[in-house]
Amino acid sequence: MPGEAIAATNDVNRIEAPVTFKTYLMCAFASFGGMFFGYDSGYINGVTGSAYFVNIIDPGQAALSGPHNSLIVSILSAGTFFGALAAGDLADGIGRKWTVIAGCVVYIIGVVLQTAAHGLGLLVAGRLIAGIGVGFESAIVILYMSEICPRKVRGALVAGYQFCITLGLLLASGVDYGTKNFPNASSYRIPIGLQFIFGVILGVGLLFLPDSPRYFVKRGRIEQARKALCSVRNQPADSEYVEAELAEIIANEEYERALIPAGSWLNGWMNCFRGSLMKSNSNLRKTILGTSLQMMQQWTGINFIFYYSTPFLQSTGAIGNTFLISLIFNLVNVVCTPISFFTVDRVGRRPLLIWGACGMLICEFLVAIIGVTIGFNKTHTDAAGNTVANNISAVNAQIAFIAIYIFFFACTWGPGAWIVIGEIFPLPIRSRGVALSTASNWLWNCIIASITPYMVNKDEGNLRSAVFFIWGGLCTAAFVYSYFLIPETKGLSLEQVDKMMEETSPRTSAKWRPTTTFASEMGLKSGKIDAGVTEDVERKGSIF
Ligand code: BGC
Image (cartoon, rainbow, N blue to C red; front, side, top):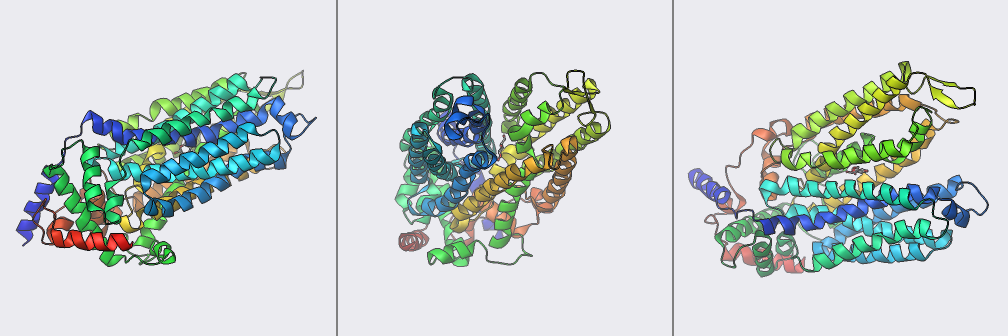
């Protein structure tokens, strides 16, 4: 009866464990994995610029040769790309928690090799291995956090991961600054070796946390799922809150398994690409949504600022201390990200992505227009032969707009892209869907990092400020994209997100309210776990 179903839903929505401080701490801990991501993306620029390091790799040269530089920088992305993809499989096999711990071990091995290196070979091998570890972390931390966080604060807690990325980037630029002029091996061993500590903190800390209850349900281990849920919700073994949440996860798994049958390894991957392109809830559409969302996040051009702002600013001749400006950019990124902790679960994911893209595109076009008219692009050569900007105030205005652009990124697309990819996939394809989306982030990160020098280098594209027309154009695409394609997932459990995507289109999704639950649709009395369904899930999960 529909009336019963509604009553059941209301029950499920009402009986929910209160979010305690311990819950916050447990759920937020894994976000520390973001440090690996940020630090690894950031520290290498300083190391490759240190004179001692250059002399080891290319003896007698003032700077690293182009091929060596790009090999050292980009080998990490190759590792992260494949690491993220492999981690999706592993997370379904050995669990989310153990995949993250395995990632820490791989990462530590890579760090030890790089620290011990005194030449190109071992360094590149170490960076490739560390990259695989970072790939594990970046995909599975998001998966793990999305699955254990209470729905009402899930956005804020996952945004904590992005906050750690920004802290990692900031720390990397500080450590680089402090060590780059050391006249010995400490100039690269300190920035590289520091990562060892991150690996140990995350790996050891996670040993004390339970695995995701949704992973246990997927593997048919209902008792372990119950224990894990009690632990992350800080509830006693007989908690009715836990009983209700578990019933819904089990019923959803039973429902999804009927639609997406498990099978061989290949079939598991093929499942991510099944369904109609026209239906917004098909697996194919969800996979395209997750991977394209991460692509769009990279298209915003944020890494142009974090990877290339120093040479870019130097080229104007207007800025004395370019390091200080990039430090300010990093600080804006760190300080503004926490704004999303408060907005993402209140305002919602969709408005943040739409208005964030709008804010960024306005700033980028302004930087471009000021630049080509009176700013960065208008320079002259002074008596001493230096390049000097004609209009310093215009250049300063451009820098201010870049900072405002970073503000918009930090409180919208930075955390938003990670939050949404953790929420849109149904359990049978979730780990692979998140893995594919994360791999797409790294792929586009690498593509953009590799092509940007050709766009801005003096003897190549020499676009200077005009490069912001490209980022502004791509942000316009991100704006239109989020308006038409991003669904609103705030406040919903992962199982409700599944239903919402079945019943609405992205533009109507914000108005959707649950009217039924998977548990009640299966004829289960709300909040009570049904022995028959449970046995079925246990049986199917155990044969995987
Ligand atoms: C992006 C990174 C970027 C960082 C900046 C992350 O969400 O994926 O590519 O460097 O934000 O804060």
